[in-house]
Length: 201
Image (cartoon, rainbow, N blue to C red; front, side, top):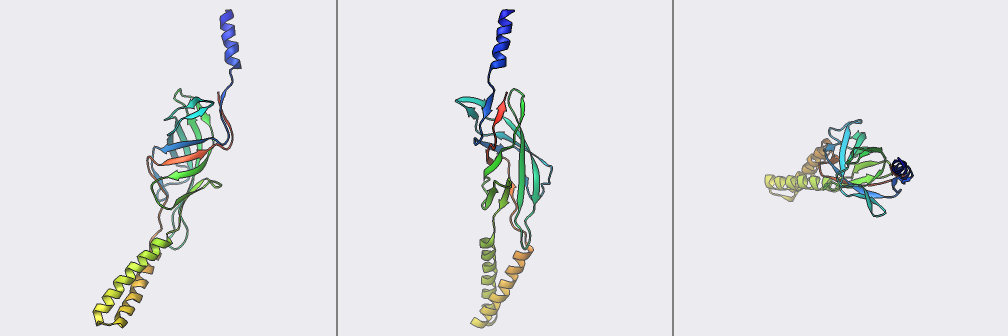
């Protein structure tokens, strides 16, 4: 009886492990989401790709389950507007089944896609501008037009007209084509930072 009471007292006084404010952890996407199909309210499933340790003790091992939700999904525009995907992380489930609420913010994303940046303040992943690719596409059409124009009347004047027509076609193609979407595929890693401490009792 005395041993049982002593054990209860020790259990009650044992301090809870706490993930400190400012701690980083890498998460890996379990499902794929993109701004082409995602809608606000869709669930996002991830797991920890690195363990969370406090004072040398692992409090959340690798493959701890994390669930989040899409807060906004904005497609890339044809003329203006970049794709944006907002994600809010909500819970982490430890291997023993205990579920804890948490809300770290996104710090960095490694999806293998070029131009995707994280806006930590808005907790969104944004697709960067594609002006370089647009200019390249217009130049390709202009070059093709110049070649065709030069062949048509075998003169520089024809090449100039062809280049102008080609540029117009290239510009029209760019304006009618949407920009790149934000695409977070399965296996994409997200670096998240805890804004406040989380007690894991």
